[in-house]
Amino acid sequence: MEAELLGPPEELKGKDVLEIGAGAAQCSRWLAAQGARPVALDLSHRQLQHALRIGGSFPLVCADAGALPFADASFDLACSAYGALPFVADPRLVLREVRRVLRPGGRFVFSVTHPIRWAFPDEPGPEGLSVSASYFDRTPYVEQGEDGRAVYVEHHRTLGDRVRDIASAGFRLVDLVEPEWPAWNTAEWGGWSPLRGGLIPGTAIFVCERSEMGVPPAEG
Image (cartoon, rainbow, N blue to C red):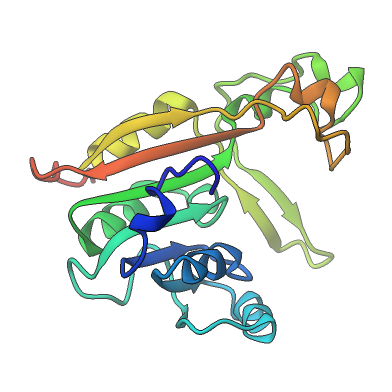
């Protein structure tokens, strides 16, 4: 938000903005406070119930990001903070849908955990600084429940994969932001810490604009 990747706050007023994989809709609440007209979309009904309890005067939509229930050119902007894209096997489906619902020149900003994370153990201390896996291994991370069914699946894409996905969906990559660990943050969270965050990027933010050159035909 401070980086103004969707544009200066004063220019968000009156803009139609789609938040994808909104979870509890924190971004939509911030956008609404700037005068934008956000719509918060998530596949999880439970997450949207949480968003409803917190409150906010904007629509909440339970739907698949790969089949957005909106007409073409419905939004000026779209955003996603660690939502949807890491959790689908083919993110190009989501990207193409986002492009479809954006107006000409519309911007889509999304963040994912930085792909380099996959090469290192998920540990905040020195043990998390040694490469333990191939960066190029695209095997999904899967957690299973007691019945053996997958309850959490996250897909790995390299930076190059992400750039090609963006281009093939009809977007132009405007910027790739890799935020540095802020000096004021002394906390540890999960596998992250000031030690690790000062050496390895934790987040990759892709700033994309809808290209008017057309969308290449889908593969397969």
